[in-house]
Amino acid sequence: MGNKLVGMKRRSPVTVWCLAVVLTMMLAPNPGHAAQTPTEAVQVTMKDLLYLLTELKETSRSAQRQWEIEQVVRRAFNFEEMAQRALGEGSEKATIADRRQFTRLFVQVLRDDLADKLRDYSIPQVAYLSEQGDDAETQVMVAPAGREVDTKIGFSVVRRSGRWLINDVSIDGASIVATYHAQFSRILRDGSFSDLMEFLKQKAVVA
Image (tube, rainbow, N blue to C red; front, side, top):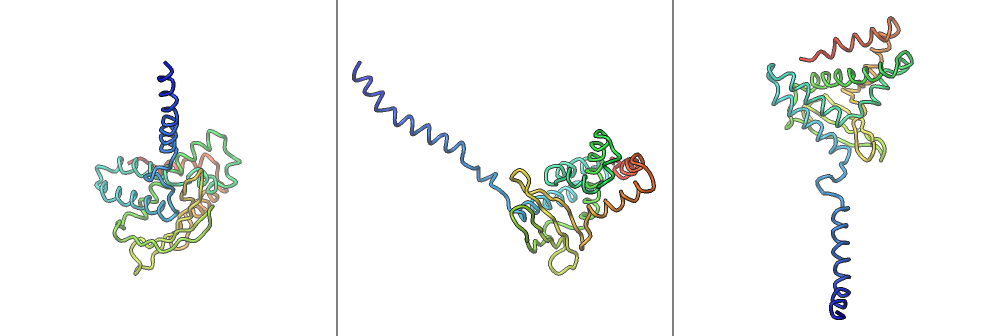
């Protein structure tokens, strides 16, 4: 009996060590999910969008294309804050339910505008030019048609919950959020929030 107890005591440190190793492996960062840089976050998003625009370009697959691109927008874009900035003071005229509906339609409009602006480019063309900013917000400059072509796209990327999310897109210096804001403000100035919602529904028609 005494020998058995001694054996158990001798194995105990080994058991503790094994448990420590297992816990360390469980808590260690997974290399496949390592934190991305802002440029890497933009690269993944651009590749996803351009791949979908190429593979699902047939008219018969337009509904699937819209759905897939919308998932990319919801995953890679800071779409709720983008919607708030685009709406601006117009949110004062909206109920909570209205704002939710607005955000849903905003994502669909953003989805279609991105597809329209990127459909002429392909993954091999894209050149990533620069990354400037800090740990909270960064600007990633991209040449979608290659370094020799003047067209430039700027991706404003912000860190949210440890991830880099696209917060705005500027094509040749024109911010897509600022463009939406000017457009929405004009509709609200001349009409009502219901008019804005109807405008968005018309733009976000599902194929």
